[in-house]
Image (tube, rainbow, N blue to C red):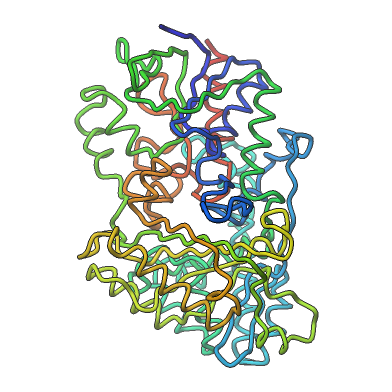
Length: 523
């Protein structure tokens, strides 16, 4: 049976749904096909813990950062379809073992004021770097919001205007060239701020040159703040789904794509597992671009040089991979020692918590490269039900823990390591949170192989493409594939592996839709 649409979108994650909404609202007939039985991809909020069916768990992502830099919510009128956001400020808190804490605020002056208690030198340095990051945002944001290979003239003009008067080139150059460890050593002495800098973006081995740029994430925090979605991250995908249906688009779940259909060198549709074929004038894939180009696209469609380039898209060069621990609790998790030391009314249950040091991150990356499980496993955690009580029964809590610093290729199989790693992470948290041991009802542990199976993410890579410096902009995912429109007519890339980045963003879907509209509406 053959079904014809204007556009087929592969993947009902938030990027795929964003692209589909823009296309459907422009009047095109849009069909989204999703391998899973529900929409949302890594933004799903479900009840995966059998012992706790009333606890709603954000299985993948949690915080929205770059989504706030976009016009998506306003363009698509998402609040009209149920989207509700709450800004979390402070968005992060760094805990020390003695009961002290350092909150990281949207306003860097508030962070610096707290930091003075630990190091006056670091407080001054933090404000100086905040000015560098803020100036960098004036250049970066316009370029992140446009096609990296065919940028809009207005965005380029805005970025060049900033660059022409940019006075902090030396500091920014150093940020982009040195290692994360060297950058932090150059500027900071307090263990709390050193740990925070490495923890917020632990994307690759901290001692590799060219990783210092990870710290620019502070610029996004200061410029846009951090928000979360009421009802869980799944509320974003649910709102997009409702928007799409209102515009006449369709989502078909439980529909895994086996191959892209190609006729006379042009992609004309998809073949689903089971043999059903769907045809369209254009196909947009939001899955891993390496999966699209090396598995779904039939062999021989790409030229030999482009095929080799696609095969070298990096998805495990960092040797680190995600582990995610979600848990349900029959009571409230508290931070009594640290909360008692605060005199400003901040609820420390709400921000993402950090307590591992720069040295512990370095040791963990060494373990990953050796194929060993780190001890401790450095990670970020939060209590989502603390700001959104709808995610757990009254008086009870959910727990969200994420690390990207576990071995991609461990010496022991992950099925043997999963529970050991989760036990270790929760035991670590119990040093800070009361209730971790005695109140736990059940948990979900997502290792790299489980993430691959659960979310159809090749090699369990949640970023789709390793987030190394030279795999951004026009080189994300690879040279020749960086502008959403591929060298194969009818085939477009979107999703976390395309410009500007992964995470709860939506911008890849927005920009890919613009490219499709240019082509499809032109004929």
